[in-house]
Image 1 (cartoon, rainbow, N blue to C red):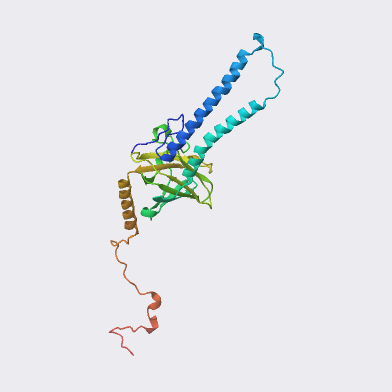
Image 2: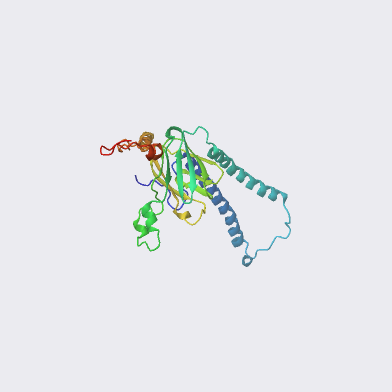
Length: 290
């Protein structure tokens, strides 16, 4: 499955979740407000510098020392602007923190330098580690002789990605086994610190029809190999995810079943259970028994 990341490299990705789209919308709203403020402020400054320059005979006004009306105006306007930005921002923060009614929970544990995923709910029992893909790991070694440009998704691929269904509210319970990490997938609008001894929560719901591979990284400086700790999420349709769960559970069941093809080990009498040699009766036809 090909990569489905939505970033163009110049702006925030619009993403594939309701939260990421709301973040992008809020980001652009604040951006254009800031552009408007910059146009007004710098426009007024440039106009004043050009219109009232000394070479044009401008004379400073020494009579205006204080204006209560002007101070009230330039205090009210910024307050109104801040309120206009704060209301949607607060509403979005509340939505980001609302992990209720999740349909799939996954425990994520950070290690130096890999992730462990432990599924709950309908996928209970499925657990695995996700580490840097071998081709990237070989290419990153000093004097490996491998051109990193020849490695697909260099340093952004793993051996086992996190598999989730689309159209499902997924909750992550994040903690760490050693140092502080950060689980981050830009296209989900999802980033949360992973702290030892503490459980953080994070949720997202990938829009139906947006199945694919999404990539992220550990976003906290977590030691020597921090740059080699990617996050890869494989988003599948609900039907494909259910089939994956069935396959994973079948593989786990088969792995835990006893091997019936192995030859049976014959039972032996332990040495301690054998009678002492002095008590054994030796039967020999050529030697009469006393």
